[in-house]
Length: 528
Image (cartoon, rainbow, N blue to C red):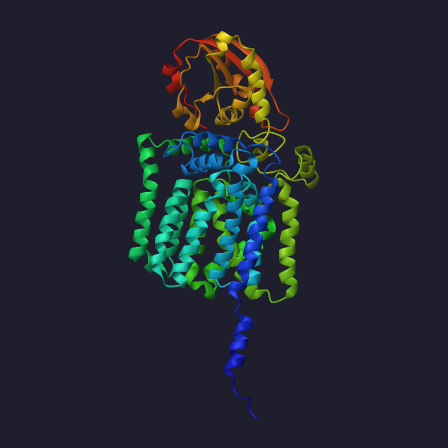
């Protein structure tokens, strides 16, 4: 007798094949909490990073724009300092929370792509252990918040597509607008997303009125910064042009190779699979725009000779898609155990190169034992540690040396002595640590510090910081310095064994500037 079809059996069969999307959310939340814990527990291991001190200083000078960054990070620094203080744990709490939110977003995107428990776990794990995220999310920089805006836009787009609710695109505009106030690279992701929609089946959304309303909101949120840029002669554009010479130039092959390194080498099995899923799998036909957007963004960064980590905020959506890919194809329990296990083992091995887990001397020995040389981003980068770590050492020691020289000055000189720093890192350190050593705020003509001017100082007595040997020994620099003052004295040297070598220099005591400092100031402007 032929067995009668049972609708209930069919429903049960489909339930076994289709993943339970809601079941993945607790997994995503667990991975997110783990990410937050990792960053909080390691937040005080080393010291303040150069840029963190700069952003704290910018927080004391709130504006709608700055030379080398958008305004949101200064506001975050100001609010953090006001509400929590400026300890390392305090200023790195929001970046740690941002790390957790990024992992959670990866889980939410996985859900919208059709993923269940395993897909969510694989996607969130890949984000959690990626070296580039471990490194950026442990610091107070706009890079910690950047993926939230990029992936927030991707998630909203998926929601609008899956629920057929184009009015949600208004929130895409809100996220893009605030993202632009966090970092101008939001422009590149927004343009890539538009290009992706143009070549995908969802191009109809570009003509929807809600997309245009969202675009208007994004522009209105970005407008204050645009106005500031226009009024100040577009300094960010000038700074970007000047910065090209300091970055290590990468060939296309080198750029792609670094993508593999910063995302964790075995993770290529996840994100490449995710890219294939978005571009080729029939189940992802409605989501093609995300795959094309990634390719457009990658091509743009290669053409503009961007740094490898500029692509980092786009990878969580590929990890999400890769999780769905492997969930649908890896029916073997062995594969489902082996792939995450490899990611965890390699991730734990490379974690000390991204997080401040080891004392610096042990880190150097660890890297030598593994024969790993961290990639360099800057032409002049030098030191026993990579720049991200090297720029966390020596700052308070430098301030103590400066304080000793400052307080040794005769009272009549000390009362009007200026502390002039060549670099915003030295200036930021003086501004952060100086009050506890009785020092005044620094003056500096580098980056946004230039706009804050020489204040009341005339140049009669100046302690000059940052004139390292490479600068002093360059043709005519020492002669030009000594010709500009009535007298120049080279005081004690600032040197820390783990700081970057460009932060090794003598403290220069210069007296009797031959021109009024306020008059000379415009000529002292120093781009990065």
